Length: 377
Ligand code: MRU
Image: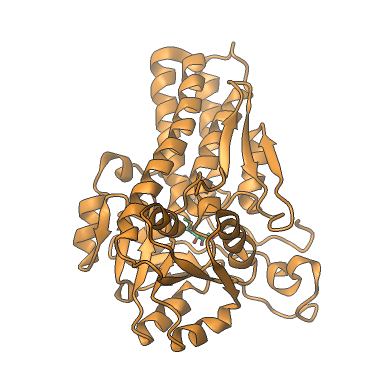
C-alpha cells in the first residue's frame, strides 16, 4: 500500500515543484508544476495544496522558487533582501497551521547562514536541498507516527476521521491516515468513516478518494451523521490530524473537530490526535492563542458553484476550531504516544532542536488574512 505523492521536486535546480491540484479531486487527478513563488502562494491560499505538513513543505519550495528568480550574478545583499521578502510573503498565505512558519523559519535560517559563508549560489543550492530534505523528514515522521498509532488499534477496528489528514495533507504518508496505512503493513485491516467536512468537503473529496485508491474500506457520512454512527456503536476510535497543538494540549483542526471530540467523549470513544512535532507549538500556552483562519463567505453560500444560501445573507466561515486538551485521549507523534498530563509529555517530545525552531513574523505580515471578496476564485 503506497499512497500517492502529494508534493515532489522534479528536475534539477531549474526544475519545478509538482503538486496535486486538490481542488479538482475527486473527479480529476491533475498535477501542477509550480515554478515561481507567487504561484506557490496562490496554491497554498486556494487549497490546491493543503493540510498542515504539506503546506510547510510547499512553502519551503516556494522560498527556493522565489530566490531562484534573482540572477546568479546577484550579490548577497540583494539575495538576503529577496529571501526576507519571499519568506514574509509566503507567511501570509494561511495563518493556522504552524508547520508553515516552522518550515519557513528553517529554510530562511539555512539561506541566511549559507549566503553569509558561501554566497548566493551556494545558498540557492542549500535551500533546494533543505526543501527536498523536508519531504524525506516528513515521510519518516509520518511512518513512525503511523507505527505508534497502529499499536493503539486492533485488527477489524473502524476509525472515524474528520477532514483529510492523509497522504494528501503531507508529502506521502499522512498523519491520522498513516495509522491506517501502517496498521495495514502490520496485518491489521481497518475501515474508516470519513466525515464529509463542510464546507469544502475534504473528507468526502480527498479522504474517501485516497483511501479508495489505497484499497481501504471507507464510508462517507455527512458531518451531522457522526453522532448517529457513534451511538450505533460503529466506531472504535476517532483519529484526527491537527494544524497546531498548544503547549497545554489544546489543538486546532478543521472546523467540526470540536463537535466530533465532544461526541467521542459522550459515547466513550477514544480521541487520538495525530501530531507530527512540526505541528506542535510550544510557544503558545493554550489554544486561545492559536490564530484561526476565516475564509470567504462564498465557500458556504456558493459552495462549488451552487447557491446554497440567499444572496446577501450574513455568513460566518471559520476554517478551524480549537478542541480543549481534556477531550484528547492521546497525541500520536513520531516520538511516541503522549498521554495526559499533556504539558509535560508534549514538552518532553517537542523539545528537540528541530521542533524549537520558530519563525518570528513581522506584525504586518502576521495579521489576519483579509476576507476575500466575491470575485476571488
Ligand atoms: O483547510 P485544510 O484542508 O488545509 O485543513 C486541513 C486539516 O484540518 C487537517 O486535518 C490538518 O491540516 C492536519 S493534516 C495532517
